[in-house]
Image 1 (cartoon, rainbow, N blue to C red):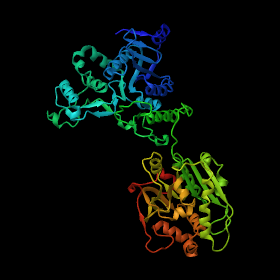
Image 2: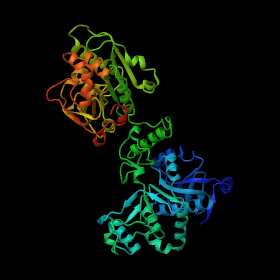
Image 3: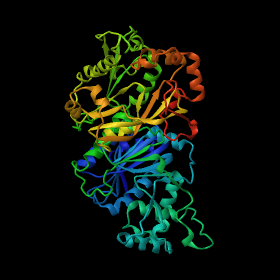
Amino acid sequence: MKTSFETKELYEKIKEDKTHYSLIILVIASHGETYDLFSECWREYMNIFPDVKSYFIYADNSIESDVMIHENRIVFKNNDHVKSRIFQKTIAAFSFCQKYYQFDHLLRTNLSSFIHIPRLTKFLKDKPKENYVGAHFHQLPDHISQRNKQNMVNAYFSKELNGRFIYLHGAAMIFSKDIVIKVLLEMRTNYAKIEPILELPDDVVLSMVLYNFLTLPLEVDGDLSKTQFYHPREFQNLIAHKLDCKRLVDTNYYTDEEIFHIRNKIASEALDNSVDARSCDIMNYIYQIRHFYKKPKFMDYIDSAPQKKIVDAFMFYNELDMLKYRLTILAPHVDHFVLVESTRTFAGEPKPLFYKENKDKEVFKEFASKIIHVVVDDFTVGPDCHWENEKYQRNCLHRGIEQLDLQDSDYIMISDVDEIPDPKTLIALKQEEMHVQYANLKQDFYYYNLTAKMNEIWIRAKVITYEEYNNQGCSPDAIRLKTPPTMIEKGGWHLSYFGNTKMIQNKIRQFSHQEFNTEEITNADHLQQCIDNYTDILKRDGVKLIKIPIDSNFYLPPQHRMIHT
């Protein structure tokens, strides 16, 4: 196979390259408007790491030699868009890389796959540099539509494998260098055996070639029918490190740091490869580069549909630890916080502005850009105005909400600071996996700490679209008290009276339920006894607390060790 180089200078540069690369990346590529957009995404990061070398692999029947090498392209002489030739151009690229580069591992991937290169190289650092083969396992279905492929596989192995044959998915296949060399050797010595299967998908063919020299599975008692799946023992399934994007995804969704391969392909069989048909795939890739590679302006000329906003509007008294917790777990998913605090308690007593006094401290500064702080200093003060004061302060949430530029489909959460929404619910709302106009957040209810669960659920926290918020008269208090048509089951956690006895005393003395503000109830010894014995501090009939160990609780708030347990 004749290989030529775009320029003599490039040939000299490659010939003199003594770098020992930890990873070579080969990206199966093609031309076309959609493919070119994906290529632009790849170019943004593919060769920015000194120990990683990357190439696109193209096909072009007009080149004079069998293979033409460019700065970041390997071009194989053949017609573009011919799937049956993807395997051959992969082999041509293998041959070039094996001849000219020193490397530990090679990744063969495709244009729509986003690769988090630092995570991948970290993952491979501890992996064997010999006899290593890793990818997402795929099963060739035992289905009538796949019968011809099954017959070819069975004939190749002289076994009735049918649905048990496992191959490596071509979106991200990783090989140590010795495996690359052995594949090339197989192509030279066993081509007659391989040639009849070249019309199969390239990843199936490449996997079948690997079977020629890797360790085949043992049959159970000599009976292949007892073997559930059939693949070489060296195959490593990397499914835990792959994420499939099947919709337009908010980058805050990417929380699993073990993921290094994100497949941007909403349709499993994308027959329509137009830009319109694959717009979500393209936008996901752009967002991933902006997010993971810290390039916020990358392709900012590309129009994108605005994502739904989430506004978290809540009242705050003095619960600084709870506030820190709420902001920490919700900030990745919330666009704006509306925090309302007052110069007076519900009971009418003057009070400090606790958030205002602490907002410049390091613990809160990171959230400042998202917080709209509303101070209420126009309460009606009187001996029996505590319920009116609570209602008035809650309705002042609107003073913050009205400052925002919201669309009808954006969401507003209305709650108190200790009513913590489940972040997974917020993700589902943003990703449009869940559609509600106005709903209760059904919350698990705790007193004192996360081992003391109430015998009732809590449904005061609400989520509502901006359109429905306006339909309801922009009245947060009325919205909180009404019964909406929908209940969100995994709505989060109400964490009431989390703190020490002094904090609980202060809350009871200043909240709206002044009928409980008695010495018998606010007595510190009584409060501590209730906490220790899992009983109700307010001495209500029918109210029970259930002791539940942390390790027996399967619906806990995220990062729950930040709060009292």
